[in-house]
Structure formats: C-alpha cells, structure tokens
Figure 1 (spheres, helix red, strand yellow):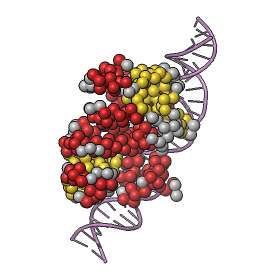
Figure 2: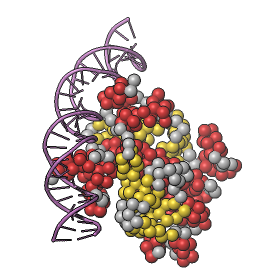
Figure 3: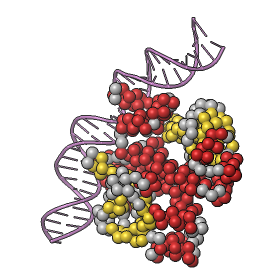
Amino acid sequence: MEKLLTYFGNIGFKGADLKKIVDSFSLQAFEKNDFVVEYGKTSKHIGFINSGLFQYYILKDGEERTHYINIENTWFASLLSFISETPALENFRALTNGSIYLISKPSLKKLVSEVPGFNAFYIGLLEQSICGIDASRIDLILLTAEERYLKMLTSDPELLQQIPLQYLASMLGVTPRHLSRIRNSIR
Amino acid sequence: MEKLLTYFGNIGFKGADLKKIVDSFSLQAFEKNDFVVEYGKTSKHIGFINSGLFQYYILKDGEERTHYINIENTWFASLLSFISETPALENFRALTNGSIYLISKPSLKKLVSEVPGFNAFYIGLLEQSICGIDASRIDLILLTAEERYLKMLTSDPELLQQIPLQYLASMLGVTPRHLSRIRNSIR
DNA sequence: TGCATTTCTGGACATTTGTCCAGTAGAAGC
DNA sequence: GCTTCTACTGGACAAATGTCCAGAAATGCA
C-alpha cells in the first residue's frame, strides 16, 4: 500500500490516522475487460487507480460510448450511483490489466466522521471533481470538437499517448472518423 | 429570511444552530442585467435564489453563450472560481429582477466547522451538484440535441415556461435556429 | 392604444459531422 | 513466417447543424 501511504502522507496525515485511512482501502487487481462497475448494479466503492487504464462507457443503441477514461494516480467514482445508491447507468471497465485501491462507502463515511481532517480531504475531492466535470461540460457547450481536441493536446498530453484514438473520439463527443479528419486538418 | 428558516428547518437544523446558519446569509436584491459574478473577478459567495431568474454565460467571439440558468429555490455557485479562488471565466447575471441569499466563503467554512451537521449538509450539496453536472455532461456526449430537448421537456418543465428559447438553445448546445427546427419536427 | 423592442419562426444555402466502407499498417498469436 | 486482429485513415455520400436573414408574433412601455 506504499502508494496510498505516500499519497495521504503528502497531504498531511500521520501515525495512527494515516494507518487507519490506508487500512480502509483494499488493493484489487483487474484484468483487461474486467468490470469494476457494471450497468444495473449499484456502485458501492470509490477508488484510486494504482495502475492501468479504465474506461467509463454507456451502451447506446448497442454501441459503446466512452464518456471518460481514468489513468494511473487518479480517483474514480461512479458518482451518481455511489452517491444516490441507485443502479449504475454506466459501465466502468479495465482497458488494460491493472489495480485499484478501493474503499467502501461505509468505510469512507467512517473516516469522514472519525479522522480529523479527512472530512476536509473528502470535501476537497468533491470540490475538485466538480471543477473538472463542470469545466468539461462547459467545453462541450462552448467549444467545437476541434477546439476540444486542441485543448486536450495541451492539457492532457499523457491521455493522447496512452489511449487509443477511438476512445478519445468518444470522450470528445465525435466519431473516430471525424477525429481523424480533425487530426488531419490541423497538420 | 423566512425562506431560509423554512429550508434549513426542514432539513433538521434547530434553535441556536438554525439562527447561526440563517444569520450567516444576507439577502441581496438584483435588478435585471445586474451582475452577481463578473468575468475576471473572483467569486466569493455562493447563494440560494430567493426570487428571479439568473443566467450563467460566457462571451465567445463577442457572443453570449449561456451554459446554465438558475431559477427560484435553487443553489448557485460559480464553483470553479469560488472553490479555487481564481478569477471567474464566466458571468452570472440577473435575467429578471430578483434576490439571492448570499453567504461568503469564510462564513461557509465557519459553519462547516462549527455547526454540527452543516458539514454533512455541505457535502450533500456538493454531491448533488456533481450528480447534476455529471448527468448533464454525459447527456451532451451521448444524446442528440433533440433527445436533450425532449429530456428537458419532461425533467425541467418549469424551465421551459420561464426561460426564453434562445437561452434554452444555448444550454442545449445548439443555435436558436436549430432549436426551432427541433420543436417543429417533434410536433 | 400604438409604437418600439424583443422573441420566435422558417427559407436558402454553407459547413460540420455522421455513416458506411475499403484499404493499410502494425501488433499479437501460432 | 504466416495469419488474424485491431487501430487508424480517408473517399463518397447523407444527415445534422450553423449562418444569414426577413417576417410574424409577442411583449413592454409611453
């Protein structure tokens, strides 16, 4: 659990509190194509990606539509399902072999109420999520697909290198065919 | 401050705590076209709309692009600016005369740390915001403009009645011209 | 009531994006 | 080394959406 120790250590947790936090997580391995969250089932965990590439997608008219991809060292949550405790409307699946530090909702709530400062950490996590999701939503309204692609080129260069273009296209809200056109036109 | 008393009373706050909460807000009146949050200035408050209609928009190539509208009895926040204490990238402006119960960030943080249960209230508010924003973002990727309009018809009928169509179109990510086509085609 | 302003609609045409598909290149397995 | 699979590209055409604009309808105000 070294990565978690470092992570929470770096943001100021120590001693017994740090141990309590890290012990609340369990490291689970996933093989390519394994589901972390499956459509129709309630998502009971959030987690921190230790390694691998994980994809959110929704089936629409029988087709996979990717709406987000998580890479190493980021937090993931099927928030709607996790928060409201309703069946997930999306799938969250491993695109490669990898592993995730998972924590259950009861454990999370326990840390929030029992560990001083964890409360602030969770609020910070939510606040950051909001900033990220909101910015992405606004971009979808305000920018053209090409502008969104150019923005991604500079803001998430590591995504571009790790993720097959078909998934990127889906995240940008266009077809792979059109992304190919965009990439061709900006040369 | 009746509306706030009722609101926080209904979710379980009482006595001195309730008074402390309500006293942290101030009711501010806005006239049509007044700015609540202005581009380039840091947003230092969040608030609960007492009355009126308020519009988030961004200027792009000299044009107003609405990305959200708040109606009565909803919470508003220029979250990115408020949370990260950076200049706002958007404007938030009164579309009609109205008033908002405002609370500053220091007061909010004070309530979170001093009033039992307010912490949970603020977390709940953030969680709900995430669910709403995330659902909206996913719709922008997965649904066509027509599907988004149909969804809005059933999920937010009150918006349809109060908001001029040009703003709705902008929220849906299409031009008024195209929204007119959509409305025509579903009859 | 009547004029001015704003909002909404829809025609004509341009641009963007999607669909379908075939071809190429590289990676993976036997 | 050969086959198979997957990712990526791009042509041809169709559908969706934008632009520009003018007229109709609704609203606000004197």
